Image (tube, rainbow over all chains, first blue to last red; front, side, top):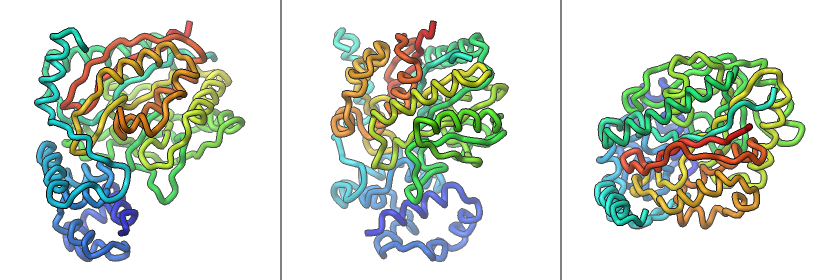
Amino acid sequence: MSLYYVQKFLFQLNRDEALKVAYDRDREAALDGYDVSDEERVALVAPDIGLLYHLGVNGQILMHFAALHQIEWSDYLQRMRDGLAEHGPVREGVYAVTGYVGVEAHTASLANASNDGTA
Amino acid sequence: MPLVYAGVCSHAPGITGRADQADPVIREQFYAAFGAMGESIRASGAEAIVVIAAEHFANFFMNNMPSFAIGMSDSYDGPIEDPDWLGIRPFVAPGDRDLSERLIREVMKTSDVAYAEEWRFDHGIAVPLHFLTPQFDVPVIPVNINCQGPPLAPLERVWAFGEALRRAADAVPERIAIVGTGGISHWPATPDSGKINEQWDREFLDRWCGNDREALLSYDDATVYADAGQGGFEIRTFLAVSAAAGGAKGMVQFYEPIPIFAVGCTIASYSLG
């Protein structure tokens, strides 16, 4: 595992226009110099948002990588959920899954609680 | 001059980036509260705004992560995010290098702090400024507390940092406003994004308004994580403002969970008297 370098690559990609151009031209070559595993390399090149989340990439970094690939917000969230379903819980980093029901159901539950006077 | 304003607000990128997906009635109430906060800051006569944010790997990374940092430049650009994604056009916000240096020197007497002569604002500062000073006509002193990449500074040290900021603000001749930005309970940018623990938020805001040091420092990261998500680590910015307020009592001007914004949207301030 080299989560640190996966995240460092994404951190640099998020802020460096030249690296974005290089990544757009040749994704494999753009990863030169970053000590990532074959699995991580595949996820970064694809890109596989669900696998990257499973590997432990912080969402505050990952969401910009998704935006770079024009992945819409709800699709971004779903890809992470799919990644967890396919690969299992997050391997490393700060995250654990809390069993969230989704925005629409949560909004409805907040409205119901408010109507009940319990919120 | 004595500190002229101390308050807190939300900064989630969805507030501007996913505005069209929110209930328009609640959204406009929130935006109005945000605008009123900006009016209060202007009415205080603030000559600079110290914005205590919890930036998100825009400028600082785990290769050299400061627990506390203060910007020291005459200008800052942003947003670092894609403008269309964030819903905020590129901007240049004024800073004040000389004022920053004086504040930093004062803070350093009692609290270790890094300084940064380059700083590109991410949503943590860009979203609040979008509402508070939309004309970018008040100098900003950016402050960061690491709330993203553990290990994080203990809350006692955050409190001491907030006290140091207050001493520094009082020591300079300029009229200073302090604004903390962050979420309370939230699980941002994760599969749980949109989850909000409203009960936890309201209990936290009660403590924040009461501004009792012991009550606020009784939180710990393990229980905050369990009850309020990793986004809850950002209470550090709220606690720093509590410490800076020096025992003043607070009031919540607005609180409403807006799941598509991924946070309980909050505007609150202390009565500095």
